[in-house]
Length: 325
Figure 1 (cartoon, rainbow, N blue to C red):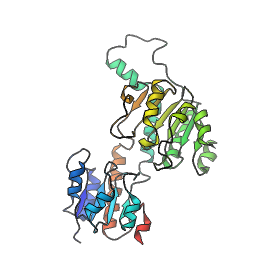
Figure 2: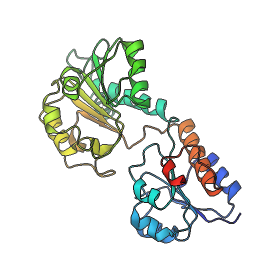
Figure 3: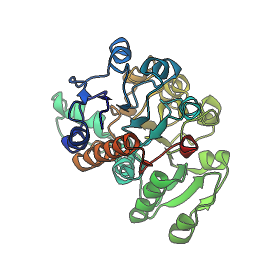
Figure 4: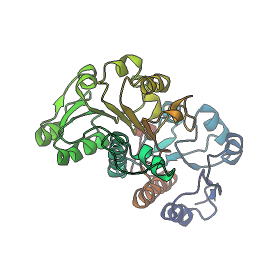
């Protein structure tokens, strides 16, 4: 079978091997940086399959440029808000993603951010490296307690559930906000399903794990931040636009909340003005899934989705089964 494939980024070797075994002539963008848009549109023309990153905007222009022969777009991510899935479905283009495999890595990162911001790890690290540590003092870098406090989970899907389950070692009370009941959390942790306002008012830590869509964009804004405890911390490893970042900067500066741990940003990779100067924020560069095993498995999954779609088979992880019809 003669097919034309483009991979928009260097990927872990296991994924590239799968792609190259099926399509030896597959072209891979050779630079480890965000693919320039103009070059991307040039490179995807005439392709049968494209393996994309969440930083690639896969919109109508993208699909028009590729051409009507495009069979599959395989996204190297669990999220796919960078893809116009409705447009792809109308064109009978399959869309694949990589769910499940990054659940533990992402929930682990949420915990890392939680601990880092509550115990002021980034601040104290910078302080020590700058040679400012001249001896122990009772008042130095006082942070928030974690054990036996209340954890609020916004979005109790795979990752939110994993995040909550790991709280049992810290004897935390768990509240969750989700459209659907989560029997596992209720049975194993005694977690309570509550409305968003109750969760924000009562939680010492609020961890966001919801999808990004029209209903969740700016779900956490100035009003929501204002009803959180002044001693509370906000953690986000989902998608940046779920939080109104301008409002968050103001809340951090005014100490409306105690701090935030972020792995994602509203205008990624740009930060809203003032965020980088907030010492009570821990800022990671979208690395929640960045473990060797996880990123390698994601590459394998994305490659397998791509190859299946090119073979005319159903991809193992298909976002839009309606496109098969």
